[in-house]
Length: 300
Image (cartoon, rainbow, N blue to C red; front, top):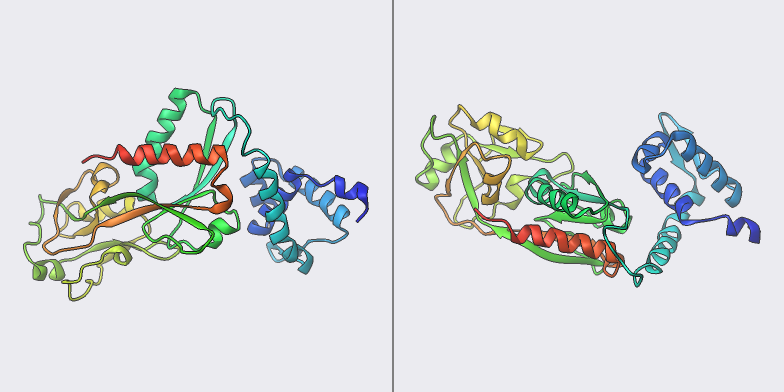
């Protein structure tokens, strides 16, 4: 690579490369980057010329990375981290920054915290855009590969480069429709009832977070949905039960009745997780503080 070619590399080109690598598609990369497909294609062509490698080859409906492209992933992340570090000590004003964050969170955490955060940001004149993706049972690669900036989950990935912060805790409760049934008065009633549970496409769900030592087994669900908003339509008008954290009575389960479980269950804690590379970034710190403030405002 010549000196001139080397100087033609910049953070935007490298970011575009990473997104194409993650999406295996120019069109999906353009959608994520909020630019045109032709702009992504132009950037890719420029990078191919600089590096002297095709980087991606057509395979069916997508793109397959070359060995060179795969080998570049780690050093490109390192370069972008270095560029980001240059800005960490700069003066920071959220009203003068264009901040964009990708947050991995299932609809429970998203709906509990972020509508309030966005309302407050709009009121304060903060230039904020948020993109949400489901987390399921998250892996370290979500943050390590910069596929998201922040992760909210009751099942945090554990690794030396992952930072965990306990965001809020709540009791697991029984949700039901009292117009159609009585709440379970005993473990036996609970086990013999019909249940609605959540099972995310990316793995994990309601049964993974219910920890009850005195419960002999987790009952097999009658209905399994892919997100929490799908629970209410099945519980309303039936004798089915759902077991979820108490704070959901403020969001997607607000139209259901709620009572304590007829057995002891462990408190559920939701964590905020980020990669250590983001710890000192002022914009990222602003986001973490804003999420923490919203979690402190949770009341029943």
